[in-house]
Image 1 (cartoon, helix red, strand yellow):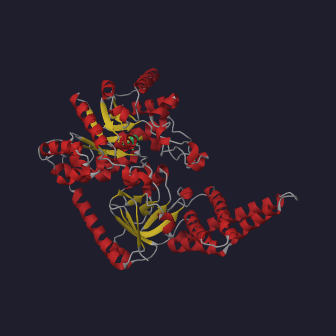
Image 2: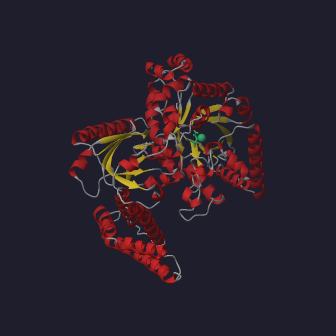
Image 3: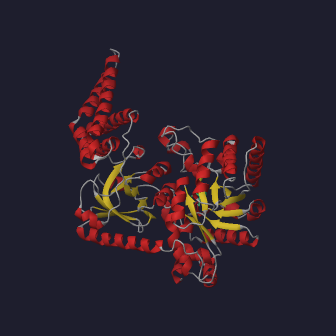
Length: 592
Ligand code: PEP
Ligand code: MG
């Protein structure tokens, strides 16, 4: 039966494929395809891990004291039984042999299938055995982590609807469906096998959504019950523009979306022709289109999209998800330096704006289960120890990062950007630490270049006290994602209030417009690096408000450039003022 689920659109495009349900706690499990020649070895790898767990449990049983409660031995019996269960073993073999999933992925896929069956059981005792099954699988996964992974990875190419109708084998596109995916886990899908993503939670500008957007594959977040309503292997369509997920589509719907998919691909091909066209409006205004990146390697995509520099390198992604991959908790100065230099070299002489670490809120350094923390750990994480507050709370860590960034500036054009400033005292401390970092490098005799210093304007308090910021900083970058969140008191990651997260709220527009105007009046550069900059429906408005520098994910640059090329800013100014003055700005947006 066909049905649809609505969420928030994240990344444009259509994906058609089979659903892969992934439990949030297991998103970090490796997902890749094996070669057919590896099937036996992969099954064997799993067998070895399972046997090790059987041994482990049997040893526990033998070591059990005589007076141990009967329930405990019975529980271990249940675990042993589950390990030998035919449904589990034959199911896993199916995912490996027929779908060429790697062993961990096959194991968790089958877990999801069986867990559903447990959920539907009438008998409460049996229903509760799901937790046992999860524990057993967790044990096997732990053992497998210690076993070397086979090297060959193969990434399937994306398929069109036409291909799909002809070919329904192992190679169909796969769409990940999860309750939640942390930004760090999302990042590891940059080289992923997935053609699209759906999550139950999250808002359009949550960091998970931002990373999903950078992957440039269709994604929908905040789709509420999607992970409960969609079943493993269901055919689904993601309409990344409308924010809709269609489950079990009929042939007519499939054909319609197949058509849309081809249209979209065609549009992209046409846009690619604009890559080397300078971004200049009809009335001759030059507009700077910069890239937002998360990793140094993203510079490749930035260049391919014709970016003229990096307007925001979210350096925190170098700090996230490290313990899971066995690295030290924080990258040291050398590791950070190497990463920044890679970005600088990657951009081939163009400026790279490195933002100091912005962790906290929905960007935790380690995943919650690594930290043993639940949601209750901080009542208001978005208002807590985040970004510059976190850096100033750990000056040694901050100095390490500042030294690494300064050193990278000897290798090319580097700009330094500080997130989440609100207080003059934070500015003073930041400047003092920057001076200290320079002095330490002088002492060591290490080189650094001139670095322009910028402040993110993303807290209303900063936007309302611009004179202080303009006194100390060379440029400003408006972080509209947070500016909207903090102006409207709407958690950007909370899908239940996503309908109130409004970039066109007159208060937001006023703060953005004032920042642009005041910055320009003093001859200082002002850029927008929040998601508003990459939203083509807002390009004309921002141009009308005087913005001439936009920073966004590379995937959005060419579409925004097209808007710039068609715009005449002399005609947009008055209209933008009217939009700003309106009670319902959205109603005036269609006028232009
Ligand atoms: C913003 O807040 O708009 C911004 C660019 O920073 P981040 O999304 O990383 O919080
Ligand atoms: Mg921000």
